[in-house]
Length: 412
Image 1 (cartoon, rainbow, N blue to C red):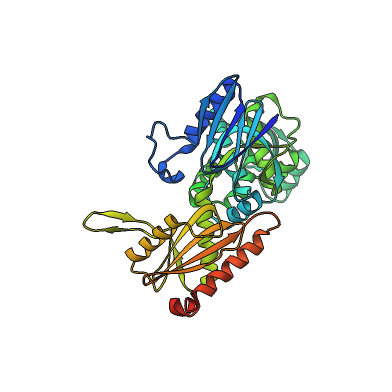
Image 2 (cartoon, helix red, strand yellow):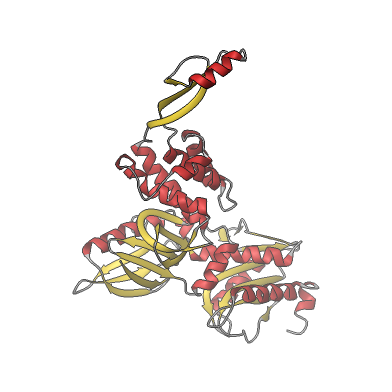
């Protein structure tokens, strides 16, 4: 299978078959979901909203416009990897610090195994269980041994006689029971049970897993030893995908966003939302016990203009904005003006702008009227380590907050 690498928020031209282009366009609309989730600016109507925008050119070539998304898309004979503009290492670090909700689809591809992103495997597992349940669970004959008050199947005469001599009128029976409690169904139940206990699962996903836990037979440790995934009976053919994901869940195997040999589905992350949530978590840890939360927004009257900064820090109320883009050494006037607007609307003496940059910022602090603005830089680029970037980012935030705005900007 071929692999095509694209960069988020950019346009590229590549040769695609008609089937691949059609599938990609369809997935682009399906995975776009709600405008709020993807942070749409409203420039496009609901009908045309899509993660990928395709324009047919000459000679089988297509122009592909990619939004602010990162992930992997499975197409016929092609895997598309959409890489983050800040680098995969930094994005994966931010993803681990965030509660980023992926958009997943059953379109199959193959990815590299890794310790992280186990939530993705659980998401794909739940989707595979949905498909399996629509087809129905397989019932099969299962050999059972049980002590009963009546005769069923074959009677073990030796043990039964012993029971009777001890005054217990019970029968030790062996029989074949036509039931859903097959090793394969119990294997799936074991993976569901493990998934429910995973800290990576949110309430929405846990509720769906709880439904499957109720519908499946009880998990059995012995069933895990009896299941041979390489010799699946024909009547269990529609179990194949779910069992592969169940095997990875029970083994604790996750995924990376690189091509590999492990069965995987399609997944896309709203990269801007991941960065915003991760930065919020980093600042909450760095500035504790100060509160760092997503703001509810305010309205400027009488025009009813909405003002929605990404962060509210306090008390006292300081505002912050996360810019998921690569900045340079100088200030962006539009970003600065927006930060000042947010601070003025909240009557905040101090505003933050968090962005990503490969170079040191020349002047990380400015004063606009009575409002102090700080620019917090997450260092990216060749040779940078995400753990070091987070540490320096947190130290910079603490430095700008120590002693209040007056002390911080005394030398600005």
